[in-house]
Image (cartoon, rainbow, N blue to C red; front, side, top):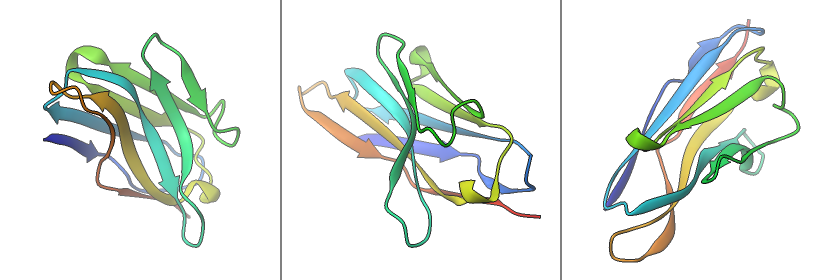
Length: 120
Protein backbone atom coordinates (compact mmCIF):
# COMPACT_ATOMS: atom_id res chain seq x y z
CA UNK A 1 0.00 0.00 0.00
CA UNK A 2 1.35 3.38 -1.06
CA UNK A 3 -0.13 6.74 -0.17
CA UNK A 4 0.56 10.13 -1.67
CA UNK A 5 -0.64 12.97 0.54
CA UNK A 6 -0.93 16.38 -1.07
CA UNK A 7 -1.08 19.75 0.60
CA UNK A 8 -1.21 23.27 -0.72
CA UNK A 9 -3.31 24.78 -3.43
CA UNK A 10 -6.04 27.36 -3.15
CA UNK A 11 -7.02 30.71 -4.58
CA UNK A 12 -4.43 33.28 -5.56
CA UNK A 13 -4.39 36.46 -7.59
CA UNK A 14 -2.53 36.66 -10.90
CA UNK A 15 1.15 37.20 -10.27
CA UNK A 16 0.97 35.48 -6.92
CA UNK A 17 2.65 32.36 -5.62
CA UNK A 18 1.65 29.02 -4.20
CA UNK A 19 3.53 25.97 -3.01
CA UNK A 20 2.36 22.40 -3.33
CA UNK A 21 3.82 19.46 -1.48
CA UNK A 22 3.32 15.73 -1.83
CA UNK A 23 4.59 13.12 0.61
CA UNK A 24 4.79 9.47 -0.34
CA UNK A 25 4.61 6.77 2.31
CA UNK A 26 3.98 3.07 2.70
CA UNK A 27 5.47 0.09 0.94
CA UNK A 28 8.21 1.96 -0.94
CA UNK A 29 11.57 0.49 -1.87
CA UNK A 30 12.71 3.18 -4.26
CA UNK A 31 11.25 6.14 -6.13
CA UNK A 32 12.22 6.69 -9.75
CA UNK A 33 10.31 9.89 -10.31
CA UNK A 34 7.93 12.22 -8.56
CA UNK A 35 6.11 15.09 -10.11
CA UNK A 36 2.99 17.05 -10.82
CA UNK A 37 0.32 16.91 -13.46
CA UNK A 38 -2.66 19.18 -13.89
CA UNK A 39 -6.03 19.02 -15.53
CA UNK A 40 -8.10 22.04 -16.43
CA UNK A 41 -11.82 21.78 -17.20
CA UNK A 42 -12.36 20.30 -20.64
CA UNK A 43 -8.69 19.54 -21.14
CA UNK A 44 -6.51 16.48 -20.85
CA UNK A 45 -4.23 15.91 -17.92
CA UNK A 46 -0.78 17.26 -18.67
CA UNK A 47 2.66 17.05 -17.13
CA UNK A 48 3.64 20.19 -15.24
CA UNK A 49 7.01 19.11 -13.88
CA UNK A 50 8.78 16.07 -12.59
CA UNK A 51 12.01 15.19 -10.84
CA UNK A 52 13.76 11.98 -11.74
CA UNK A 53 16.28 10.08 -9.66
CA UNK A 54 19.72 11.38 -10.47
CA UNK A 55 18.59 14.97 -10.29
CA UNK A 56 17.08 15.56 -13.70
CA UNK A 57 13.98 17.74 -13.84
CA UNK A 58 11.48 18.29 -16.62
CA UNK A 59 9.06 21.16 -17.07
CA UNK A 60 6.21 21.96 -19.38
CA UNK A 61 7.11 24.85 -21.64
CA UNK A 62 4.22 26.87 -20.22
CA UNK A 63 5.67 26.86 -16.70
CA UNK A 64 9.40 27.00 -17.37
CA UNK A 65 10.95 29.92 -15.53
CA UNK A 66 7.96 30.32 -13.22
CA UNK A 67 7.63 26.96 -11.47
CA UNK A 68 10.33 25.06 -9.59
CA UNK A 69 10.15 21.42 -8.60
CA UNK A 70 12.27 19.97 -5.83
CA UNK A 71 12.55 16.64 -4.05
CA UNK A 72 13.51 15.72 -0.52
CA UNK A 73 14.55 12.12 -0.99
CA UNK A 74 14.93 11.49 2.73
CA UNK A 75 11.29 12.39 3.22
CA UNK A 76 9.97 10.95 -0.07
CA UNK A 77 8.47 14.37 -0.67
CA UNK A 78 8.21 16.54 -3.75
CA UNK A 79 7.44 20.24 -3.82
CA UNK A 80 6.22 22.56 -6.53
CA UNK A 81 6.89 26.25 -6.04
CA UNK A 82 4.66 28.20 -8.37
CA UNK A 83 5.46 31.86 -8.96
CA UNK A 84 4.04 34.46 -11.31
CA UNK A 85 0.84 32.51 -11.54
CA UNK A 86 -1.48 33.15 -14.45
CA UNK A 87 -5.20 32.48 -14.87
CA UNK A 88 -4.31 29.73 -17.34
CA UNK A 89 -2.57 27.87 -14.52
CA UNK A 90 -5.98 27.25 -12.99
CA UNK A 91 -6.49 23.51 -12.77
CA UNK A 92 -6.63 20.53 -10.47
CA UNK A 93 -3.05 19.53 -9.71
CA UNK A 94 -2.17 15.89 -9.13
CA UNK A 95 0.92 14.42 -7.53
CA UNK A 96 2.45 11.43 -9.33
CA UNK A 97 5.07 8.94 -8.22
CA UNK A 98 6.73 6.18 -10.22
CA UNK A 99 8.22 3.75 -7.76
CA UNK A 100 9.16 0.21 -6.83
CA UNK A 101 7.63 -1.46 -3.80
CA UNK A 102 9.46 -3.84 -1.45
CA UNK A 103 7.68 -6.63 -3.29
CA UNK A 104 9.34 -5.61 -6.52
CA UNK A 105 6.29 -4.06 -8.12
CA UNK A 106 7.09 -1.11 -10.38
CA UNK A 107 4.02 1.09 -10.71
CA UNK A 108 2.58 4.57 -10.95
CA UNK A 109 0.69 6.12 -8.08
CA UNK A 110 -1.45 9.24 -7.88
CA UNK A 111 -2.30 11.54 -5.03
CA UNK A 112 -5.60 13.28 -4.55
CA UNK A 113 -6.03 16.38 -6.66
CA UNK A 114 -5.74 19.85 -5.25
CA UNK A 115 -7.44 22.83 -6.82
CA UNK A 116 -5.35 25.81 -7.85
CA UNK A 117 -7.36 28.82 -8.92
CA UNK A 118 -5.71 31.97 -10.23
CA UNK A 119 -8.19 34.80 -10.38
CA UNK A 120 -8.59 38.41 -9.41
